[in-house]
Image 1 (cartoon, rainbow, N blue to C red):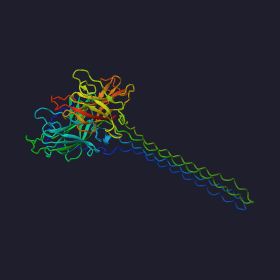
Image 2: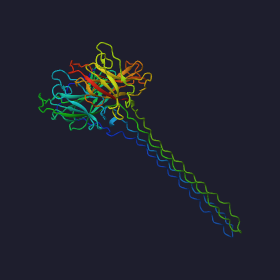
Image 3: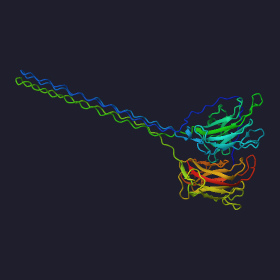
Image 4: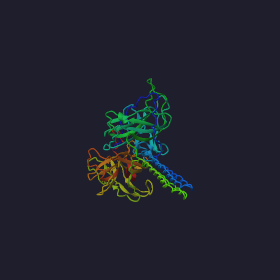
Length: 555
């Protein structure tokens, strides 16, 4: 396996403090719950109509009085009030990892370093900048996880960079495989960086350069150099991938990263600033792609308002007609006409319903947690018979062979459980492969985008940090076993780490790649070949390693 490095871009000559970049304005809290619409206020009922007027008085005794006209019926109540307008629902803001506008490539909210590691490439030319991660003169830089620092949430990568002079740098990088190139045309790559220490002179500020490598053979490079923003706080640095020029091709990204540089120390007069850089503590967080997403919708709007009140009560009929006149007089006239019925109020208009939000994102699918058994995972016994091919430690004919078994003492979370592999490495070009084959029960992972395996190495492995072991998570589909293969350097130390591989919906040149027919999944850990592209050779052979594998899942 090869530790691919970025093609180094010559350090920009920067004199004086450049314009600072502002932090991208995005919410730092968790995704808010959508706000439901309020219930509409009910309409007011119409008023009750007034009763008709009092009947006419009786006629006098001498003459028969005419019968009084009946009073007119009261007017109907007023129209019912209209229903209150329903509150419209506010759609939820897109739910994304770590409070970023889009899902992050590297958010480091847990101790998972998400495939990011030191780039171990260093230009061998005389006078070239020195990579502090692999320098042979002096103390090397270290990379670890920080649970206390982060932006917007705690959790970040922490680099201790022992700067002692100009033309020194560290470079943090994540790589993809040649078969899983990323299409990022038109996007902007963001990363947040915080630095304490470093260059003490304002004449020569440090540089922060986010970048991508492109092409299966790293043919292209596209980066943006920025002066480090002073003040010791978190700041956002951006490279606009729409500005990349040939041979860089943002539709074929194979690696991304950020380099933090001491610059060349030029004083502008042909000399070098005598005030040298010093030890720096660097925190890195929140790699994400602007333009790559639309937020996940919230829940629907509020309930429509209730209907208006009932219409007004019908007016009462006219009063009773007046009594007849006295006996001597003629009969009174015909009784007056009853009052007219009041008009009922109209029903109020119902309020409108709030707009519904769009659906949420799919959840991760657990393949195995190894809580009580190996869940069908075992060592793959296939080995390429070609001369010079890598040696599978599970089936080699010379030397001790690898073994695997369930273990109840190591694991991530509870209950504790994992698969323990004893890998008797004693040279380069050796590996083991822990695999699960689904046989005739092919798995449907349509819509899933990344496969992950958590593992840790508690003893042994590659002794030379410039030539780390490699961890390769992979997924093979259909009976033809066409697959996607990731690659991650094994990070030094005994902490849990994650190997991952991106799962594209389709793959050029692989017509039988089909996520609806997942046949086999696994993780391969290999010692590499012990040599570099610059003909460098590792300082010592690998040693027997103890490896634990836990928590296999797909997102």
